Every structure is written in structure tokens, then in C-alpha cells.
Length: 145
Image 1 (tube, rainbow, N blue to C red):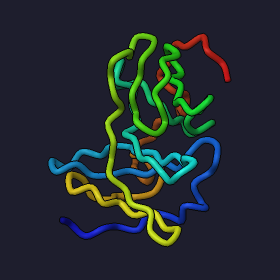
Image 2: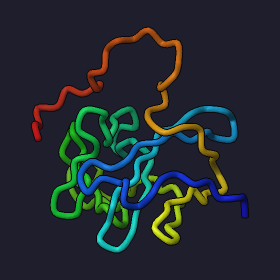
Image 3: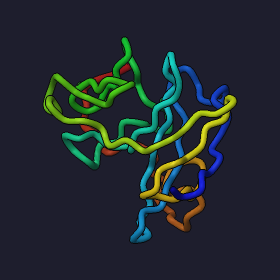
């Protein structure tokens, strides 16, 4: 088991929207992950829809949209169970979100996934020299929340 990394306090994970951080894969690529507060703890999901992996579920302007215990994909409306990651509707039906292992202990959230390492809080591009000022998600969605 690899050492755990402190992420944040469970109290600092907003009840709506979630908390975004970035992990580094073994090959060096960066991947966004978001925490969601659940009734009985915290879940961590990689920030992409299973139907279209370039479609983010957590967006900086609104976080992750959660309705009736489900994470709503802003592009096609598929809904993933916030606790299990499973989707049983829309274009992503039958798929599961990619989970990242976290542990809550004494009110603090720790990254405990052996497959990734913590990079930083916030989006993957935070702190980069990328001059792209376009903060608009790559979506053609007609859905509004």
C-alpha cells in the first residue's frame, strides 16, 4: 500500500458541486478527479463521462451537477449514481465512472489510490503556461442547469 496523501477536510467538500483536484498517472499524464460529498462519506470520480471521455462532468463554473443522488452529464444527460458510479440511462447506460480510491478518517479526506499520485488542487491546467483563455467547456449541450 502506498502512503496516503491528505487532500482536504470532508467539511470543505461542498454539498453541491464537489471539490476538484489533479492526479498524475504513472506515465506522467495529468487527470482531473472530483470529490463528491455523500450522505455517508465522500466519493472520488475521474472527471469524464464514460460515453465521451473528453466531456467533463465537473466544470469550473458550476462543479458537478448532482440531482436526486445522480451526477448528470452536461452534454447528453446521462445520470451516474453518485455513490456507485453506475449509469442506467442515456448514451452512457451500462457503464460505470472511473473511481479513485479515497479514505475519510477523523473528518479528513486522503488519496489512497495506489495507481495515481496527487499533483495539485484544481484543474489539470492550473499553473501551466497555457495561454488559452477559453474557459468554456467543450460541449454542444442544450441542457441548462
